[in-house]
Length: 116
Length: 117
Image 1 (spheres, chains in turn orange, brown):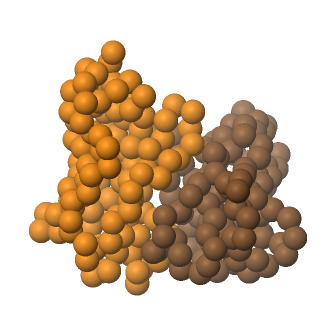
Image 2 (image 1 turned 30 degrees about the vertical axis):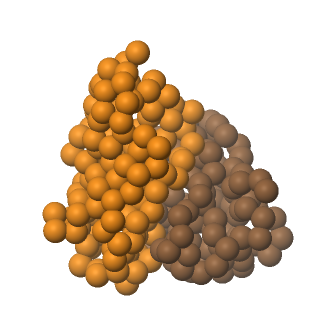
């Protein structure tokens, strides 16, 4: 079975601080994809990143970076120099090839509040 | 190129009424996925449809819920005799080909927030 755990329910940081959102996943599949989505207060879901299980290279996109470590089954997300506009709920998700290929398994989300 | 369009944005129904949620996929997409987000939870997969076919409904409640994606027109998620526990945000996503939810990012609509009073 697939499972995604986001242990941090809520995080508050002061603007310009760095913040890391944790994501731990479980799957028996050897081929899978991991995703991060952002859900701002307006409610829509914004796709941020996708990584496949064979590519453990870390990725940086502007102030966002992702650290994928298969050894610890983690796919953590760091925002540097946080801004008020980063305030949102962030979801980590997993899609596996053999089981639930049409179906993303989402974590319960981490609510990030950036205080000005 | 318009994204996935869902309507209505908000829907209020009294217990026992029917709710119909609509989803128009992105242009050129023939595969639609419905997800439900209960309050303070992540999204959970409900059903995956191709034009005129249900491919995977493993996440659909056994009763009162149905989905269709006709040859013409939007996909419809229908909830009969709604109960308070159906109150949630319902999201739709689309993709251009089968299996692409696995190997390409799903782009979601803005969701329909159903409130059952």
